[in-house]
Image 1 (tube, rainbow, N blue to C red):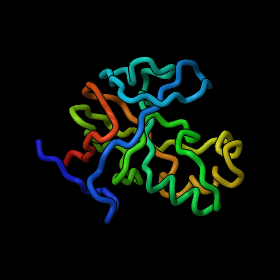
Image 2 (tube, rainbow, N blue to C red):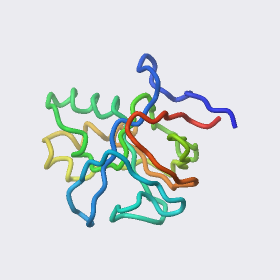
Image 3 (cartoon, one colour):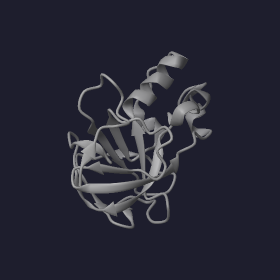
Length: 157
């Protein structure tokens, strides 16, 4: 199947996975990991939130950086509470598209709306994340496998 970087942000270089976080309990802290396993139809192995339409959450570096620049505060992306941080992919209006990370495939189901917890991380962050899907996307795992930072990321055409 042909892959494309269509939807990648111009000038950002190759799209890749930058970070992975798991949470062991609902509302629990996000824990960075050096690798993880995506399970088809479930989500990330060891993550508290699994199943349904929101099996994995994704955040793009460029959208996050635009939002934090807008409020003038440097906030670590783990504050967003997403599972996967990617560079070079714009999630705006991508519902229904399939994203490939290494050998895994994720169907984007929708936009992850910024919640009031973003205000706890930094005043103004919730509003700064609202436009253009800056708060990220959520999806369903179609094909699972191992993931690690540095893995290639691309949209399926």
